Length: 184
Image (cartoon, rainbow, N blue to C red; front, side, top):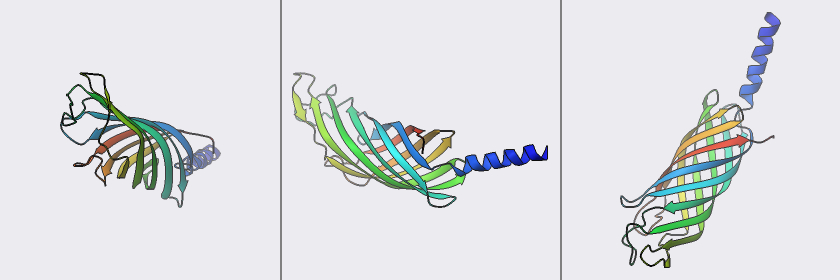
């Protein structure tokens, strides 16, 4: 019995010690908030590397691609109507620090930079394409909660816009992501 208990404790310690270390690949979805007349969504894929610097602290670098979908294009666009559509495609880089709170649960924070490679819209009345009036680059500050469950990582975070995505307002987001830990 004593040997079984010691084996169990050593096994649990080894499992808890590997949380937050290694390469991850995953998907994320976000609900973007900016102006009351715009319904915006973002979906993307990313790869990240987490490195523990001590038993409780660590750093994570992340790179990914995303697309933003504007279901109801802003009516202030020239000739715009509420049923116009717009979308973007871009890349994102993040660097976050994390702190293990208890077991596999951690809080994290850090900057996120993104850049739109493509941003266009379509007028519903004519089908004509137009450039949407977003700034191509954006800087956000991310604050969130994550949990490592076996080889999966689940994160929920708030991305606060530090720059104006549009000329006159910020575009914040609530992001949910799921990642799979690859072999280290």
